[in-house]
Length: 247
Image (cartoon, rainbow, N blue to C red; front, top):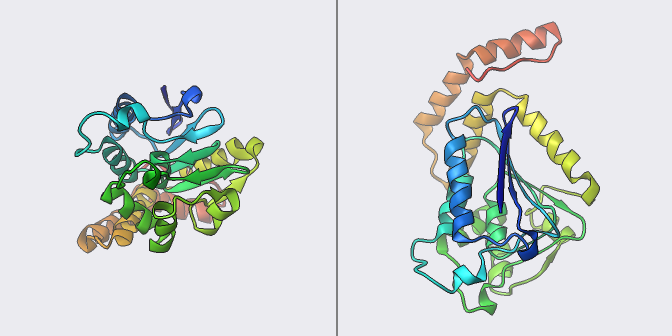
């Protein structure tokens, strides 16, 4: 169900159960979290999350939704881990996204979708009060009014509407998805890791209203004192591409 590869500092996690539109079982969610935890101690510089088949993800498996204790929500734990992952994350939406799969995509830093895709969250149609932490993620990323349309109307959003509400950063034809994702991943992979990862953290904290100013100042000072900063200045002067080492 979950395929994970790490090559040339780019990690790729693929949801690979297209017969059920890549729905997430507890086992699958635990597997993705375990991969994120493993890669947190690696030299990874960018993470790509995608799926196979006609859909990116249809959310949590209905068989799992109807059973067990959900007071400790595994989807929330997964989305928190993905949102807090130290490197930039790209969600390559190969098709439609529904239910909890939408929150999974929202937990990434960038989202690229394909023409013809749709999105909806059917919580009110199955009598579910969506997890407050998840609702908070929608409000943080899309705004409160878009969140109302998602949860109180269970509105179906088309590809262009997803651009309009800021869910998608880019919309491409299906044949161009891999190329666009690779281009963004390459840009991040070639940048200075300390600067990229430090600013990701600062942006996330500012958006949450939880900025640790002292820690952000330390990250700034660390970058100015880094070998990568000196390499960047040298490369600019010598009119060549920099070779950043993350130190």
